Each structure stands twice: as C-alpha cells, then as structure tokens.
Image (cartoon, rainbow, N blue to C red; front, side, top):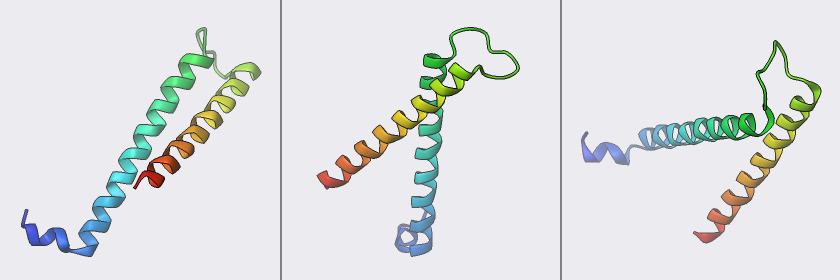
Length: 78
C-alpha cells in the first residue's frame, strides 16, 4: 500500500467504519455468549420461556449500559 494513500480522507473514513463494524460485531458476539451462558440453563426448546426472555433482555441492557460507561471513560482519558 502506498503511504500517501493513508492521507486519502475517503480511505481513512472507510478504515474507521470497518474498525467500528468489527468492534460492534465483537460486542454482539460477547453479549451473546455472556447472556446465553447466564440465562439459558437447560436445552432450549422451540422458543424461550418467559423467564429466559426476561433474563436475556435484562442481561443485554446491563451489558450495553456498561459498554457505554466504559466507552465514555475511555473518551475522557484522551
């Protein structure tokens, strides 16, 4: 890759968008693993029970809230 191409605003924007997409995908994967392990204790049927649905929803909310708090703290460090 030509070093001067890194000064191209469109390329920089594309790279930043791809980084954000990768971070989002990683967050969703972690969220899925954490909440699944916490909330689904048996073999799932064709649909989640009401307690599993409630647990998954609460777990996802807490995980996302904590992610926002952590991101804000990192932003304040810079």
